[in-house]
Structure formats: C-alpha cells, structure tokens
Length: 377
Image 1 (tube, one colour):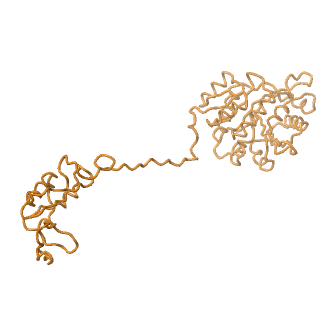
Image 2 (cartoon, rainbow, N blue to C red; image 1 turned 180 degrees about the vertical axis):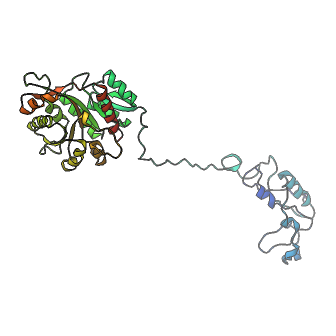
Image 3 (tube, rainbow, N blue to C red; image 1 turned 90 degrees about the vertical axis):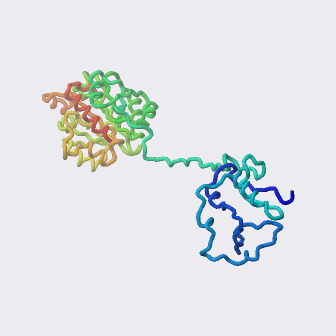
C-alpha cells in the first residue's frame, strides 16, 4: 500500500538506555503541524504533500505551543512513540519518515560504543605520591636499641633494661652498619665480661662515627709500680679511640680530672703516644676549654661528671650544641687510687694501668644516666 509507509527510525547513541534529556525534547505530534521556523527547527512536513503557505510566516511569541513551553512529565517508550508517529503519518499521500528512538528489539541503527549502554571507559590510573625524605626509614624501637660490645654483665643488662634500652651485641663494623637503619642510641663499649682488642675497637669506633652514632667507652684505672702493673697502658686504648683531623695533626684530647696527680700521669703517657692533651679540673671548666681546643676525644672521671641539672650546661651539652657529640668519642673511667697514694703517682714511683671499672651501684647509675644523656641526641 503506497499510502501506508514504513517507519524508519535512526538509533541514538546509548541503545536501550533511557536518556531523560532526549526524552524531554520529544514532542507529541499534533494534527496540525506547527509553523516552520527559519533556523531549520520545527516539525517535519510530509513528503509528497504541498507545503503550507503559512509555514513561512513567524508565529507570534506569545502563541508558542504549550508542548514546547512545558516539558513532558514522562517520556513515552520507544515503541509507543514509533506507533504513534506511524498511525498519524498515514493520512494523506506519500511516505512518512519518523526520526526517533528505535523500536524494542529492532536491528537497525549503528553499533553501540564500547561498554554497557554506550559508555566509554577512560583509564585514570592513580598517580604516585611524592616520597617524603624527612620520614625515617623505619619507626624507632621501643625500647630503643643500644649497640654494646662485648656482652654486658647481668647487673649492667638489668640497669639498661630498666632505663628503656635493648642491648644489641655487635662484634664488627659490618654488624654496626646493619643496625644503623634502626637509629641506635649509642655504641657502648664496656669491657667487663671480656677483653677488647685495639683493632676491633678502632673499627667499631670508625663505623659508629661515620654513621653519626655517639660512642661511649668505660675503663678502670689502677695504680701500681711499673713491675706490678698487670694492665695495659691507658694510652693504647685512648689512641685507638681518638680520631684525628689528618695524619699531620695529632689527636686532641680533653681530660677532665680534678686530681692534679692523676691528670699529670695521664697527660704524660698520652703525650708520649703523640697526642695533645688539655686538662680541665671540672665539668664546668671543660666547657670553656672545649671551645678553644675543639677536642677529638673527651676523657673524664665518671664520679666527677655532673648529674643532669636544670640550667647547668656540661661538656655533654656543649658537644651536642656544637654538633660534636656524634663524632667525639667519650671515655669515662673510675680510678682506684687512694688519696694517700697520689704523691707516689706524682713522683713516678707508681704508674697508671687499665683495670676493671667499678661496679658499685653509684657507678652503674651514673653510667646509665650518662648513656641516657648522649642517647637523646
């Protein structure tokens, strides 16, 4: 039948997916087509029928169709819209072509885009966040690690644990390097439970200083005649610990000792080993002297070290404030020298030698307190 044409529709993108914006623009056809707009908009005319002469005249603004002013509350389905256009387009002669959504299960139309309902996936991978160089490589230990060599005795081990330290035994430079990432508080050399060698001590000191880990060494001083002395010369230990600015410059040692006789005996043996020594009678005097000497090594009597006091700046505070605490080894000793034997030491009748340090509760308490001071760096 030539009067009843086939309704051909063009599929919109997003097949089978309701699109409210499109649906709102679909107008219900009326029996009388609206006037033709100059810009190409408006209703189509039926092919094969003469054009309406009145279509060229502009419609008054106030007489716009109500269908354009008011959006449809509910868009008709695709099949209903197609059937409506087909039924109304059969009057007259010629074919009627309706443009709109396809019928349900229709085969015509373009292929849908990738994705469900014509959606296109846009790859948006997460961007890598910049690394924060200020963060530590791993969290600090609680209790904090304390590198020790050799293994501490039972009393010292308990004292360190009570103050929040976890002793980690190291024997070589490689073992020190392996612990640096955990930010150990200090390297604590306490030769109570075993002998130490000069080569191993020097290697551990170099590794700790290179990693900016404070170094603290304990020692004991005994007094005896040269023939009866059973320990090594203290200068052997101190020279292995003292770094130097260069091979041409001797190590600078700051000695804090209130007894002039002991200080003189230590100064003599150190100078014979090629070290430069400056002596301070107290911890307070050492602060002034340290600013002039810039020591490579600090040696002091453990029992003369001031406890931490508010408003008092000792040698430990000076080293920290001047950035020298991590590169200046600290040697603390206990001297088993009676007051009556000091004249014999001054005259050279007796000499000093390395011995076991004091293990009294006062000495243990001072050592742990000193470690806490240098370990807070």
